[in-house]
Amino acid sequence: MNFLKPIIVFVVFVSLGNCAELFQASKKENNNDAIFAALLANNGTCGQSARSGAAGNGTRFNFFGCSGDATATLLGLGFTAQNVSFNGGLSGTSDASTIVTRASSLSSSGGEKKAGIEITYVLNSVSSTLKAILPSESNFNGPGFLISPTTIQKLVDNVSSAFSTPASWGTSVGIEKTLCLEVHEENGAHIFGWEGSCDSVNRGTYQFEEDSVTVNVNGDRVGLRLNQVIVKSMTIYSSVIGTSGMIR
Image 1 (cartoon, helix red, strand yellow):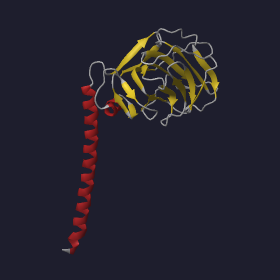
Image 2 (image 1 turned 30 degrees about the vertical axis):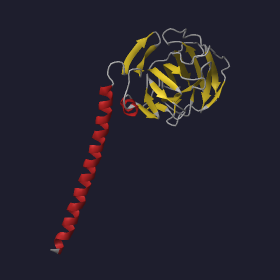
Image 3 (image 1 turned 90 degrees about the horizontal axis):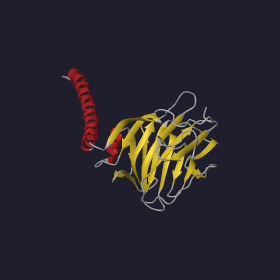
Image 4 (image 1 turned 180 degrees about the vertical axis):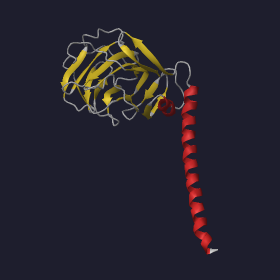
């Protein structure tokens, strides 16, 4: 019977390996089922849709009608999320409340990177801030914008400073507001944007901007940090928005 022992041991190992594979497959199926269930529960006004207009083409993500498991729903929509929930939109409570796209979100990747978004949001208090990083690395490094109740500043690797061409407005606490934001890789980064929807602004003149910002543009994602903010919707553009002759 001793000659049977190696055969028995081999059969046991194969069986254990098959069980492990079945367990992993079952776990993956359960995760997919949870994501699918979350998306099904959020029909109607929650989800993504193609968008086209004067500013070009993109994908609109509507968070206003979403409910339930925010992490699973956002995963199904193509985002990795931390510490966010659905409450009249995508709600965050601190800088640790984040979402970032899971795939490239550039409007142009040939040579110099470009990325643009339209975002509609509500700031909940005078200390609220919304950070939009684009193009972002997965760790949220990169150029972008720091939005507060009365102004907007440029953001470089999580350090903010005023634009050389600045913009300000009356307090927007509790008021729904829409901004159109774009970053181009040009001698570092050209960071600019407008107050209003991307389709409605003068895309040849920038309301706020900073050219030749020293920053490494290594990422290709779009990331948000929601400190006491509700984001109602966001459009990520697949075509370049700005048309000024400054842009190469």
